[in-house]
Each structure stands twice: as structure tokens, then as C-alpha cells.
Length: 287
Image (cartoon, rainbow, N blue to C red; front, side, top):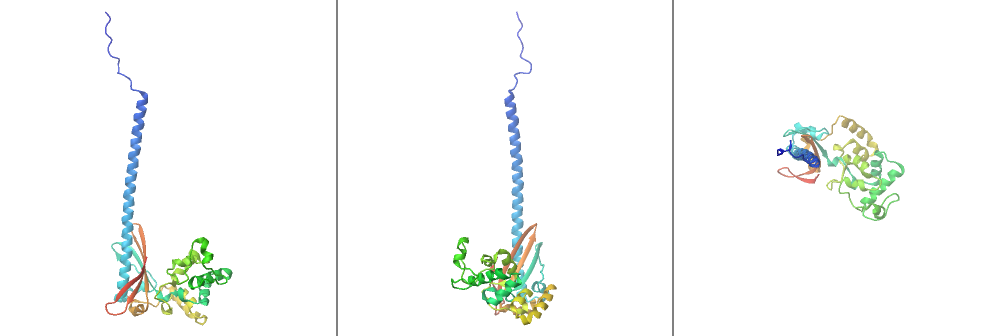
């Protein structure tokens, strides 16, 4: 009688394809796990960035409030904020730079005549046809008729760009970039020295930038502009907090740069003091 054969050594062999599939599945799961970890780290980083940005915005808003109340209080010790140099108050560990600009010391671009517009663009280096195009187009944008000046532009000239000229005063400095012959670069260079504030129709040389003085003053007073330029080179202007009665005559703009936890925020607010008891104020524009 033959002896019964025992079981084969090692048992049945696993299928090779199944082994490959199992290894592949493990690789996929490992990859997905790594992807989930990366996504989680990214989500945490984004959340942290959003929190830092929110803190920076809050700090910028606080800088505006601090500046307004310093002006109202007439704090002569804080003249740096009003003489052209950044004021650097502390707010909850954020780095702030605060500047104050008196709007009547800027060029009221909605209310200047053709010779003044010409000087403004000449100062920016325009001449010849480029100057004529920018000047006439700006004046056409501001006037209330549809008749184009020789080098100007009215509605038909903007139609292809989908732009409708206002035929009235500019409502923002940014709007200036839409005027034919001006554009974003020139508008950005003009922004620090012009104002579209509805409460400003006249120019106050006592608190003006040298560039604004050179445009607004008659040629015979050019020496004053030079003196102002020298004064500006030392980062000094006439306005101080001890002269806050000057601010009652018109609005001022507070500009704040805030940085915290690697995030940055910028805030600008045009403010007007309201005469009377209590030193009240109101926000004209906020951006």
C-alpha cells in the first residue's frame, strides 16, 4: 500500500498579479496620505495668512483713528504726523507709518483753468502733441458739453474702449487714468499733488507740496516754490498740530501703512473737522 502523500510544503503560492495590485494600492494610499498632509499644512498656512491680514487691516484702521484724535486734541508733541514725515505709533505690536496731508495744499484739479492744466502736465514732462492731448482731453472730460477741443476727446472717442466720459468733475483720483492721453502711470504720478475733494475749490500755499506750488503760483513767485522745495527736502511743511485751526478750513487725508506677522495693509481716509464745540469730525472718503 502506498503511503499517503503529505501536504505540499509552503501551501499554495499567491497570485503574482494580486501581489502587484496590493503593493500598488498601498502606494496610492501613501500618496493620498501625503497629499492630505500637504493640504492640511496649506490650509493652516492660509488660515494663518488670513488672520495676519485681518490683524494688519485692523491696525491700519486703528492708525487712522489715532491720527484723527491726535489732530482733534492738538497734540503739538506729535507734529511729525503733519510735517511730511511718517509718524510711527505702536498698536498691539503692529508696525505703523502714518502720514497726514492737508487737502487744500493740493491742486483742485476739477477747478483749474487751461493755463494751470498746461503747467501741471509740463511739470510731469509732457510737451508737444502729448501735452495737448492730455490737456484738451482732461478739459473735455470736465466740461458739460459734447464738443471736443482740437486735441481733446468726447464720447465717440472712448466708445471703442467702453468708457463714458463724465462731462463733470472727477470723483476720484483713479478716474483720471481713464482720460485719453493720461493713463495709469501719469495719474499715479499726479495723485500725491491733486485733489478731487468736493470741499476744496481753492488752494492754500501755506501747506502745499513744492510741486503743487510750482503749478499754482504765478511765475513771479517761483522763488517761493524753490524755498518750499528746500523745506520739503528736509521733510518739513508749515502744518503742525498746534495749528489745528487751519484744518477747520478744509479736509485732510490720513494715510496709514500697517505691517504685522508678515502681512501688509494700507488705509486712506479723507476727514473733515466740523466747527463747533466737541471737535467733531466726519469721514468723506474711506479706502
